[in-house]
Every structure is written in structure tokens, then in C-alpha cells.
Length: 140
Image (cartoon, rainbow, N blue to C red; front, side, top):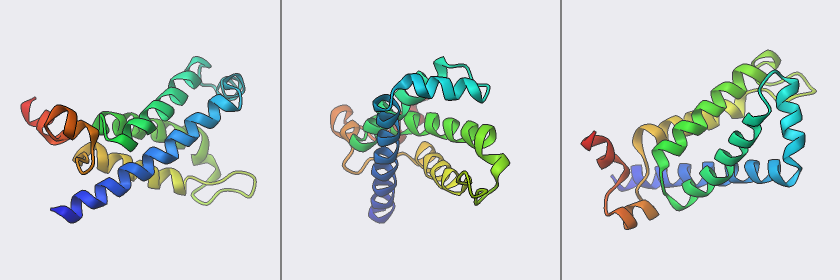
């Protein structure tokens, strides 16, 4: 059991750091640039704010271990849309001008794992709510 939780902790923190940085870069680089890029690929511009916010706040939430299942599910949706909308046409390994979707698939797999299993080791949610992320689904 400890090995499983340790593995989930590593996935949770790694995914959290990666998405936190991705969200931060979107805001630091000027969110208007991201809005314009979203519009150029046929995605409504306001979605740039939603995606960047989920990445930034969700990434932080994963790092500290709050809302792991919900945040991971949202990140999985983002990865599915990004893969289908942007990366699928360039192939698994890319085309020389744009990276492929191999990392997107890895991030998607990590997010799905965490959405299904949660992660309670060193989780702030575990300490604050005195329950693990799996007990929420048991009550439902």
C-alpha cells in the first residue's frame, strides 16, 4: 500500500509542477497572446483564461494535495482536447516544426490515474478534511 501511495505522490507532485508552470507561463507571457492563439485554432478565446487558470490553480492544488481527483479529471479533459485539436495532425513524434503528442499522452495517463485513484500521502486534503480522496467517492 505504501508503494502505491508513494507512486501516486510522485505522479501528483510532478503533474502539479508541470501544469503550474504551464499556467504561469501563459499569464506571464501575456494571456492575450494565448487568447489569440486559441482563436487562431478555432477555440473560443475565453477558454484560454479557463485553461490557464485550471493549469495554474489546479497545478498548485495537486502539489499540496487538495482536490486531486477533480483537478486531475479537468487536466485530463484539457489534454484530450489539446491532443485532438492541435497535436493529432502532427503525429506521435511531431513533424520537425511542432512536437508530437507523446508527452500529452503521458500527462493524460498520469491525470487519469490520479482521477481514478487519488493521492493521499502528504496531502493537505488528508490533514484538513481528515479523510482521503477515496472516501468522497464511497459516500456518493
